[in-house]
Image 1 (spheres, rainbow, N blue to C red):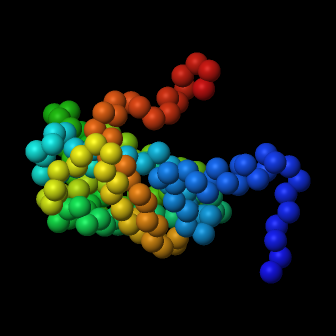
Image 2: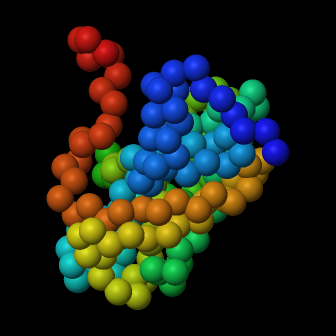
Length: 165
């Protein structure tokens, strides 16, 4: 067995920290999941949602086609759209979400997300929910999603086009 060698302590630290980040999931290095969190609107809610950033490091598009978790009777991929009157509606997206080659796709509040329907217990601050994401090419990726009921709507979202970004 060949043991890898590193030219600096910084390289070793970078490797170790990348392996120890909570919530980060990898699928053969092609798909990376970062900044996952879940929440429900109240402790008594029968539904909840998970949000995260999915990065595709491969040279071809992939597609998130489904999700599953034991926390709910049904787990679906959802988005928000405006109807003819401008009223926002949440709908299932059975075809899933494209994750572009060399790019990312954010699942975030008010947009695309993983929806938990028929929660079998309340989501409590600090709980960890194992969620299995299924991709067309990368296959299954299990993500440990922490419940964060205190997360503000824009927390963790990149502000594109803002000065300094």
